[in-house]
Each structure stands twice: as C-alpha cells, then as structure tokens.
Length: 250
Image (cartoon, rainbow, N blue to C red; front, side, top):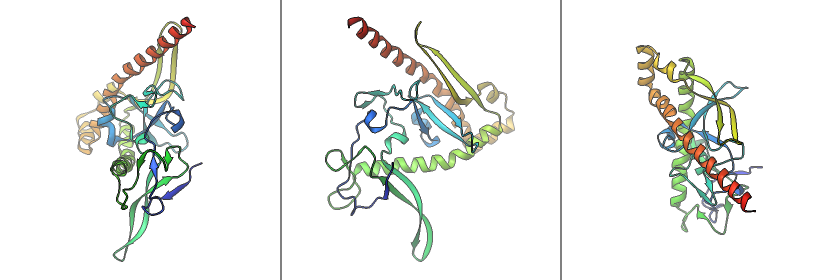
C-alpha cells in the first residue's frame, strides 16, 4: 500500500531511487497510461490506444507494452529496451498535485511533489540521490519534475482532446487478434483507436476546428503509432523462438 509524504529536503535528505527496471519494481505490465504531451516521443516506439472507463465514461490514453496483463516486451533484464521511457514509468515513486498555499498574502493552488515511501524503488543505499548534499534538487529530481509536469498538463489537456475526438465520432473499438506462429497468438480487447476513414470523411469545418485546437496532430500521431505493433509482434516471436530452442535443448 502506498505511503505518500510531501517531498522536502530535510525529512528526505538521504532518499535515493533505484532507476533500474524489472518485475520487482512493478514494470511487468502489459500497458501503462500515456499522455498527449508525450505523444511525439511515444509514436517512435510504442502503439498508442485509448480506453474508456466504464463507470465515469471518461477516456484515457495508454501505450501497449505486451500482449498479456503482465507481459512487458520492452523489458530486457534490468534494461528498458527503448530510447524513451513512458512518463508513467519514468516518474518512479513520485506524484504531483495541488495544495492551497499562502503566497504573498494570497491563497493559491501550488504544485507540490509527493513521494511514496513504500515504493520498491525507494532506497537510502544505492540509486540516484533525490537531493544534493546541501539540499538542492539533484539532476534526477529535476528530470522527474519535468516528467511530472508533462503528466499534469497531459492529464488536463487530454480530457478536452478525447471529448473532441469522441464528439467527431473518431474513437472506435479495436480488437487485436494476432498470430505469432502456428501455435501461439493473442486476442487483446478493450482498446480504442482513431478511425482513419471517419477522420478522412470529416468536413472542412470539423477538420479546421480540430486543427485550430491542436488536436488534429494528436489524432495523426495515434494513427501513426500503429506501425509499432510490428515491433511488438517481432519481439514476441523472438522470445517464443528462444523458448523453443531452450525446450529442444533440454
């Protein structure tokens, strides 16, 4: 269970974060949340989809990491085999939120960072220091702060974008029915994507509205990201091949 505290350089002066990757850190997952603020990075290496919360009816972005709930095909030993790590993973044990604070006599909602002290990445021995010896933010914390701001902005900005896509009829169900070889395959349901034909059929006014709001680029990035499914399939086939070789050798 998470145990969050507001981060400060006194109580947490010796805090370090293990930045390796692996199942022990909770990285063995088939998909993670994604944010429109990172689409331009994600599109190079990950397939981007949408999901809809059955209770609230709200949409969110996700990136597919594998074809099963606990399968992350980007994990290789203690490495993340991609040039960009999704923000949801890169943020580690930190969260960003708002707190009402008195600033020059005026109450304002200021961004604050909290840390989960029970997170498996937390350590006081090895790992990246969170603070410098004299109390300043370490380069690692500066990086995490940038990631958290992207998540915050992407979460807020994404809501309006998803609503615009849904209103235009662009978000449609996608079922991934994939064959890896004669014996192995996967069927992934519950994913949504941008319907290319519906986007192409939009009238000029609707297209202009999406472009003017900055959402049209997001739609094209989501569609372009689908080519990364080939990478996932190839990696799955490679791993199945290694298992077959090992079984034959045994």
